[in-house]
Image (cartoon, rainbow, N blue to C red; front, side):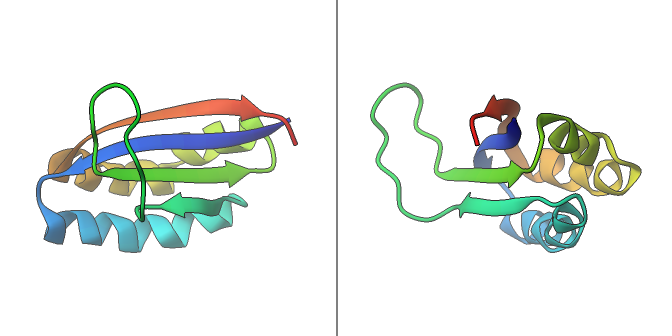
Length: 95
C-alpha cells in the first residue's frame, strides 16, 4: 500500500520556510515522493484552521518513512520546524 505525508502548517517566518521548501523539493522526489497538494485553496470544515496543507504520496508507507528519516531530509527539516508550527503524519493509503 502507498504512503502519504499529511502536513498542516502555519508559517511564521516565510523567508526561512522558503529555504526549507527549496531543499525539501529536491530531496522528496529522490524517495519517489509526489506532491499532491502544496498550499493552495482549501475550506476548513472542522477543527483548528491552519493556512497551509501539504500532501505527498509515496509508492509505499515504508518509503514515506524512509524519506522522513533520511539524513538528507533530517538535515533540512529543522528549518521548517524553526519557521513554522506544523504537524506531519504519515498514513498508509489504498492504491
